[in-house]
Image 1 (tube, rainbow, N blue to C red):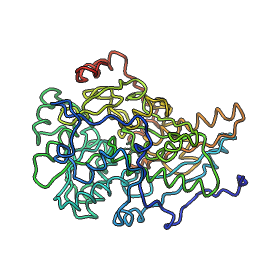
Image 2 (image 1 turned 30 degrees about the horizontal axis):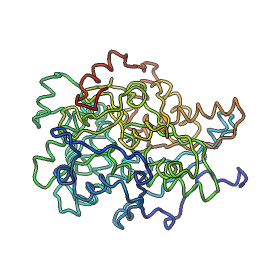
Image 3 (image 1 turned 90 degrees about the vertical axis):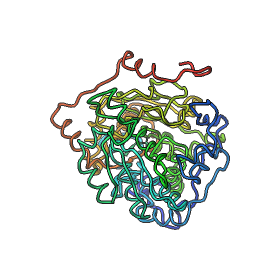
Length: 462
Ligand SMILES: *Cc1c(COP(=O)(O)O)cnc(C)c1O
């Protein structure tokens, strides 16, 4: 056993130690995630049907339940090298502050201009679109991190980028919008009158501040009706979790260097991509019966898809233009209160994580906004990094688990994902600092409205 003090504050990998393949956790799952269904026929979506929406190589990755390792193309590896490997940090200062015997590590994904892990998949998706000879891509963005990441990737590859941005974020975060435009993306607040589905949603919900589900509908409509364009998505899909496995692979390589075995791995969960990526190689070991770890997904109490949602087939968007995905969902017409963790406001959850949670391989918990910002503030003050509100959900639970260790005297090793920085979230920090942040938790009646919109067909009862 290495002496605790021999472990540096930051464990960096060398460039030549970076993973050269993504890891596909589906290959090790006995119960595979359920396939996407065509909402018209209720049959699994074929590659041909999906290729109208996504570019061909990504369709292949989406449907690949068998190949354990997939080569990362050299061009993507080269881009990764501009901001990876990302550091795994030993949170010595936080441990001291908490006076806990627990050993806390965090994998920091905020060290790039987009400020989050989303760049890991953005560059992959843009690369395959470019390779196919497409003109451009369309997408939605909530808090703005995904749109920023995609606009960076598209600028690098000289690809056009059309972003539909949830209206409340478009208004609250003008600086995010301008970063995207600086990288050459066009940004439209959603719902908008530029699409048929946007006009319909505006007519049904006048004055709506929008949701990720609405913005997805608009972006998909534009992609499928504009020649040379495809749609890309920043989370939820199998392909995105595949690309994000780079986070977990690097984390594991860094821990292995020092012979460290985590007991507990924690991540925030919006659509599930950072958590799915962080836990992937560890989950693989658990699924193969080689090791045991605890995994905890942390979601906001205001948008509790895993902890209070239904595990059924549902639309991925509000306009019901996407395929059906089997996942923990609050219903595609659930519009969460405008809380301050925009990246965690999606109504559903990755099919992979949903299946793993359903099968008991992963736990989930929800936390309230004010306690999340208390954790964020403590973290910023002792560890120096100003965390994204999304990431701070994981910080909250990591702190809580470390405090439990203080009570029991257990020296557990805790790893959590610090997915990004919060510089564009100062309106939220301002609310917290002024003491006017509220903790909205939907009632069962509120949730029933969303559940009522879940499509009904034999075998899909809620
Ligand atoms: C988007 C985002 C998340 C949540 O998305 P997942 O797909 O669940 O990872 C978390 N943290 C940050 C900083 C984000 O930008």
